[in-house]
Image (cartoon, rainbow, N blue to C red; front, top):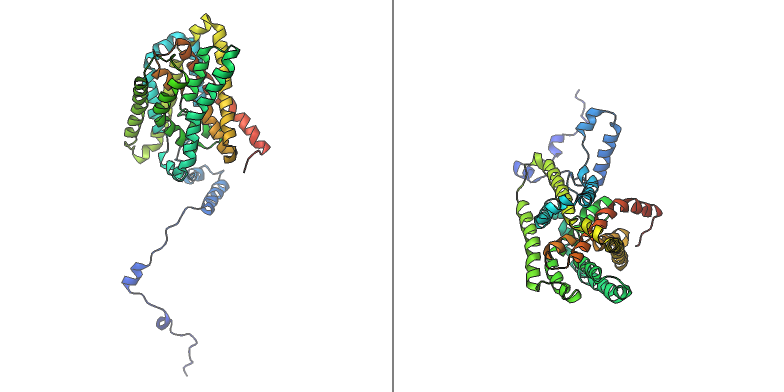
Length: 384
């Protein structure tokens, strides 16, 4: 006797797909997410004692930061090397005198390596913030030199400040922010992307803002026409940008990309160090011949940097702790080397010497800022 089966014929109920319908079904690709990154980190930490596992499970990539960006020890310790170049230029004037004729090419080289080391793909993140960026650039390139000119010539000169130092203060405030500002911001935990955007655009605008405001705020002390000054600035900055953007089109093979980035970091530190040595030409000699002037110039230089930082941070305090301090960094750290190269032979030696002295705190203060900012963060200060 045949017993009835309780199982139904599955083959008659299961839907069947022909080859055309099956081809339309696509399996979604796995996406990197915070959860997957957490699992990745957990797996690596659990097997941390196993050296083989350490090699098989690499560190996960960080969003928005290129592999190797900031990981090179050159970027962290390069600031000490550059400041060592300042001390070498002061201690051995013969070396700075030998490098001074190469000041303009060294400036071009720093622009080139600054562009090669920058992650320009991240600039699109600020495309929708054109108006705030324009306001920040106006404050840095126009308002701050006008403010410094009023303070120097109206307030300080009547109380005995030498006119050459007053003119030097104005020219320093007219200079664009350092292209090394993004690296400094990264090391200090600030907004390196904002610093990159502003520093690049400020260098492109500098030939026009400097040409117009320098003759208005400084006056006849500059023995150079507006056209010639603009031509020199365009030649230095334009050449650096043209070479940098052209070299960016040369792509290293994928397996050598990390080595290429480290090479760019190394060359950037080398050129900045050589530039720092060249900028110190004449400073030691003036310190022997006119020590009072140099001491006053050093004091004014060390006051100008933090005062401009405080002014910039105060004007943009509503942008929060990180944003306001980044603006302050851009306001305080100026690339006066561009001004020295453009005004060579067209400004009094005392003014040129002051512009060189102003760079000393720009290379020295970053060595002291890190511990201070870390202390401020422990307090928990921030603005909404």
